[in-house]
Amino acid sequence: MYIVIEGQDGTGKSTQARLLKEYYEQQGKEVVVMDEPDGDLPQAHDIHDLILIRGKDYNMEPMTNVLLFTAARFELWRKIAEPVLKRGGIVISARNWWSTLAYQGYGEGVSKNKIIKLTHESLPEKYCNPDRSFILTVSDEVRLSRQDNRGKKKETFEAKPNDFQQRVNKAYIKIAKDFNIKTIDASGTIDEVFDLIIGEL
Image 1 (cartoon, rainbow, N blue to C red):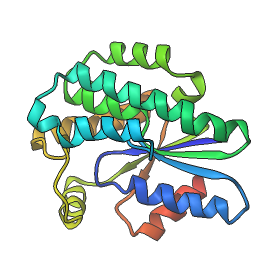
Image 2 (image 1 turned 180 degrees about the vertical axis):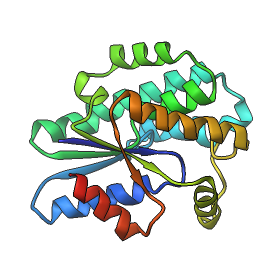
Image 3 (image 1 turned 30 degrees about the vertical axis):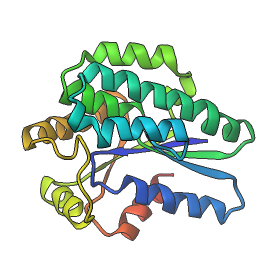
């Protein structure tokens, strides 16, 4: 089973993915978590750093970001996700291609049809259409508070101005509607949000 937990920075995707991993492991299942675009794969990690850590210095074109993110996803899918799924395991991904649709499409202005076409030509149907998917949502105030409390330097897109963040926030609502993805209010405690996700699964 392939499960995706999506949402803007600061919504708690990675935390919930790891809780879900523990939940399924307690049932004796093989589970792997992928944090796109990093995913504990060296080449994907390098792409992550290029875009999200050094990207502010390079001022890369939005389409370059699309291509790099897609390359990272292809590597993660082929080398991590596919083997686990073939063995009957569970893959839980914090983000998938909907992030690029939100950030590079709605946020940075790349043609949304171009992103959709590139993704579907590069990655299999299973990746493009997960078995279960959720978009976590929080208010701007909660999102910013959580980011500030992390105590680490903001990455490339986290550091962008509020008008960009507003476009991305609205994008996720539209993506949820367009792709029939369940939205989860992630403003509660970690346990409360996890209970909501389990309730949907």
